Length: 165
Image (cartoon, rainbow, N blue to C red; front, top):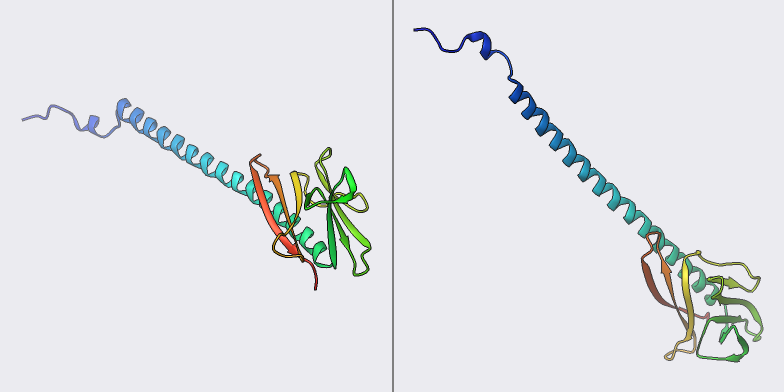
């Protein structure tokens, strides 16, 4: 009995088998590329959000350190610096003699928190800034602000700082 197929034909790969292997390989490579792009985008977004959080942390720390060296404070609106308020966009830090030694003023036109020398303190991505007298303590000042991270997402931050005793 003679075989229907010859041995020579069984040794090679058919064109259909080769096209099937190439197609499956192509699909696997495309899937791996899509997964890589998704992971890379997620990593970049996370890094940008972390940078925004670090800026917010820096600003809170900077304001708290300035408040902690003061003996007293007064809050007012920058448009009317002679009238003290419980909530405003400006904070005067006073020494033990009641003299102003530092000031933090929110400039809404330039969207910047500036000190008494007019220098911007804090990151450029702050949208609002408000100082509030703590109703529960005469030695604490509350401050809140809204900031954006590098992805454009906004974050509201509320914190407080206590005067030195």
